[in-house]
View 1 (cartoon, one colour):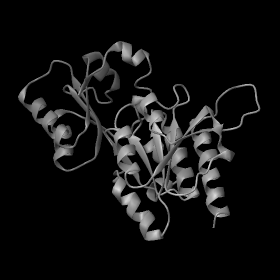
View 2 (tube, helix red, strand yellow; view 1 turned 120 degrees about the horizontal axis):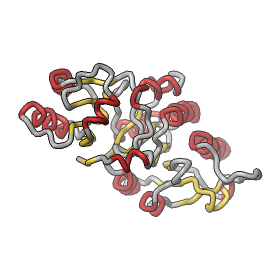
View 3 (cartoon, rainbow, N blue to C red; view 1 turned 60 degrees about the horizontal axis):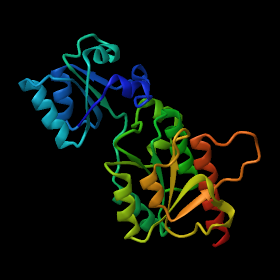
View 4 (cartoon, rainbow, N blue to C red; view 1 turned 180 degrees about the horizontal axis):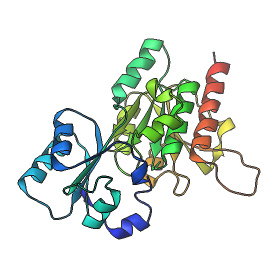
Length: 265
């Protein structure tokens, strides 16, 4: 659980526009029943300092689902609320269910292919996530992995931006991206991340079981995640600015992997 301050909002930690989320659930009974019905909840907002019985029950259910819980001010809840009757709790329901990483590996095995995954670090823009899911599908990736914190979930906006690919390409949400990478490395996977200071991607051998790691445009890939990558790939740039849109970078790197797989038969 974490407490969110006004300073956090100013830093852009909640860049996803709250009113764009078509899956808000407001009010104690509605939120509690959503959890008990097994609905996938991306995030729970709770009025800071509210500790009465019904709220404790909601928090207990959220912990069972490993839902991200954030304590916020009354002003913040009122700002997000579309009904004006939040009763101190607002939940963000996912528009689509999440998959498991294990399912992605199983799919690759069934197809007789080396696993090809796309991992996203700090991607908070729903249009970027949707576009990356679309690219993942067309490039033949077996799934997309996103972290629980500091990332947009599977909202309706993401689904629309994916142009339907969200129905075919599984997305898994993990608590710790670095730990997930470490576990996948034990199973033979390699990881490459996009970074402008990396070795030119055309010089790297990106065949075999691989995960592509893409960071946000502002911050790039975080230090710990980057340290866990086996390759740092630089995308050649000839213009006057120094970065590509995150979804474009994902597409360029993903299709270099496609090219290498095709050329190696």
